[in-house]
Amino acid sequence: MHERILIVDFGSQYTQLIARRVREHRVFSEVTPPAQALARSAGGDLRGIILSGGPASAYAADAPRLPPEILDRGVPVLGICYGMQWLCEALGGAVAPGERREFGATDLEVVEAGGLFAGVPPRTRVWMSHGDRVERLPTGFRRLARSASCPEAAIGDPERRLYGLQFHPEVAHTPEGATVLGNFLHGICGCNHDWTPGDLADELVRQVAEQVGQDGEVVLGLSGGVDSSVVGAVCERAIGRRCHAIFVDNGLLRAGERELVESTFRDHFRLDLTVVDAADRFLARLAGVTDPERKRKIIGHEFVEVFRRQAARFAGARFLAQGTLYPDVIESVAAHGGPTAVIKSHHNVGGLPEDLEMELVEPLRLLFKDEVRELGRHLGLPEAMVARQPFPGPGLAVRCVGECTPERLEILRRADRIVREEFEARGEQEGVWQYFAVLTGARSVGVMGDGRTYEEACAIRAVQSQDGMTADWVYPSRECLQAIASRVINEIQGINRVVLDITSKPPGTIEWE
Ligand code: XMP
Image (cartoon, rainbow, N blue to C red):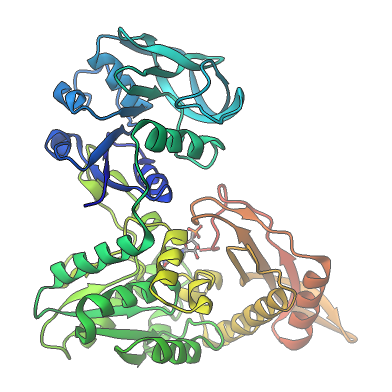
């Protein structure tokens, strides 16, 4: 049995990030809503409890609370933000609205080195996001760190092994966050870090086998990207040939995509693959449509129709498997039935109807992209498949601003191929999350030979990101930009101008639609 950390979800946007950070320390964690926390905190495998942040005020009548007995389990407890405030209230301290709200990067001064702050410099930056603050510490607690507007930025009662952090150690903007969490897991909880990617793979395989049962069959929506390929590998292990992969050529694919997906799939999977030629159907539905949301809806709807028809070919195919990842799941808390309810999934196929009549199999829905890549490597998928840049479900449609005619899509496809080739020829794709071309719909005047042109502008979009939720634009070398601009304009009729998109996310999004 693996040692376990219990994460109580008080409704924070970051709860799943906490779980991810704990996994990074090779420790198994389980996320639970407050109502089940006491029951889930029993068991000899439990090494510690982490209480997440949340939107409530600890002093509000309707704030989520835990039975105080959870603190008598004999394991260390770390409260983060609201979690710390609940801890203080529960133990006789006091929480009140702060004089100033604190959002974003803040300087932290470590008051007590060692323990939770072992290896952390005396001054460091942390990410804060709170309005309330702890005004009076419970008996036995003392201050471990402070910030200018939050005297009790980190607190602890080392004797009882109870700790609280007002800042968020789980977000990337807290550079020493991993060290602090590591100190909690290792130094304080005594975890021995025995949860490997192999264990995660085994667990996912077990879950899929259990969900699908002895005779269920699964239709897998294969896109050729890393997520659905990893789902394929998990399903293959879980249910073998009862998984049927379906790849839809919707006319919105990149150049060479269909051939690449077919050959890589046949080389690495023992599942049957059906390639559905649906380009005419998708493009007919998209004719004359320019509104980005309508385009997405139409594409999602058409995908579902294809999957439905394909599922009808297999007697027991009650399941649709997809490579949905955590960032696709818009409402985080609901993923665990936490206090802020409402599940709203953003699916790879662009939204599913309520009467789908198929049960979803989404083994990766609590994971992040880089974790899925690690998992894929562990499952033996080739590096070329695992390291591929993400490609959105709606395909080139979200990069072809305006109407998706076959002609414009072909122009975009050729421009995109050039962008990819020039990045890859120079190794400039290393460390870049995505790099592609956008057909902007903006037309401008140019001069070629002795003639006037009036054609479209192509944008180069390249971004760096950890999970697609935030992103920074990338500055390719001058040589790379020059090669792209010159080739695109010389080789493709229909584009007479090339621009570089230098918008980060937020405020932009990575895709243009
Ligand atoms: P945005 O444009 O929202 O994209 O900044 C963030 C990341 O998600 C990808 N993306 C999608 N992936 N189905 C997908 O599977 C979609 O509908 C979709 N829309 C955007 C995008 O390529 C980027 O990596």
